[in-house]
Amino acid sequence: MGTNEILEQLVKSSITTTIGGTFAYDQYTQFIRLTKEKSQLLKRVNVLTGIRASQRRLDDIIFSEDALQKATQGVAPTNLIHPTITTRTMDLVEIIYPLDVTLNFIEENIEGNNVEDTILDGVTKAFANGITKQAIAGDTSNTQQPKLLDGWLKKMAADALVNKVNLATGELTDVKAEFSKMLKAMPIEWKTDPGLAFIVSPDVYQTYQDQLGARATALGDSVITGTAPIRYNGIEVIPVPYMPGGTSKKIILTPLSNLVVGFGRDISRDKQYNGRKRAFEYTIHAKIGVQYAISQAVVLGS
Image (cartoon, rainbow, N blue to C red; front, top):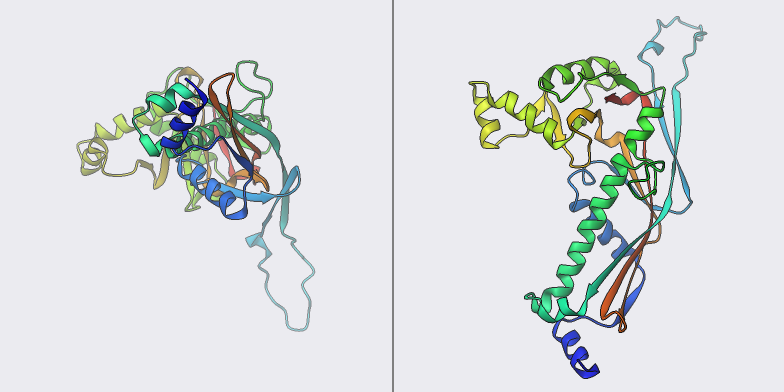
């Protein structure tokens, strides 16, 4: 195929040979929005954007109900109770998402002029899934996956302030009983938080779904037909593909707003055509970080 024929294919597919650079503010916000929409978990957790430094402080303040005292006319209280301020830090790491799309795909695709939208949609979805996987199961000591950052599970396991619960050995058969143990371990301050959720693997979710579906009730019928969200004691149960299941299962119980994903201020996307490879090279650069704000608001079952 000659140069003119290549250019003809590019024009048909509405693809230019070079484009890129740092996103403008509206492009940045749109990319973050699309990334969140591609992940069921990212759209629910606390996503911080526009972070300028390589580290972000996460401060939280907790007020005690024990500060209430009997007032005495003309006498200042002597038993002063100060709020508890917790501080955690979130480190951001630079990441790159490289992707090659061959010219053969451009030539033979059935999308026509929509091929560029299809590629960008796929890149955004893969980018979102990659961030979700790292946020949950990232482990810089694991040689079987990219050493990008330590995710929530590893951070929680190493945190002495996180509430820990031992789950039943082997594959879970009575998920309800495990949920009960974890909810009992949650401190009273967060036990009734409206955003509280169980984050589980798909197989644990299905086991619990089967448990509820076996009940000869309207709830059991709704679970079987899939017309209602799955809950335990009013708390939503969310299946996430990257949560460990089977005999290595883990369950997280925490308010979703307590889980934090951070994006650096700048995100860039570059695209160029490489004639030697007969491929388009797409590259996304970004800085991301994951953390949770309050250790005591987490129960980890493992």
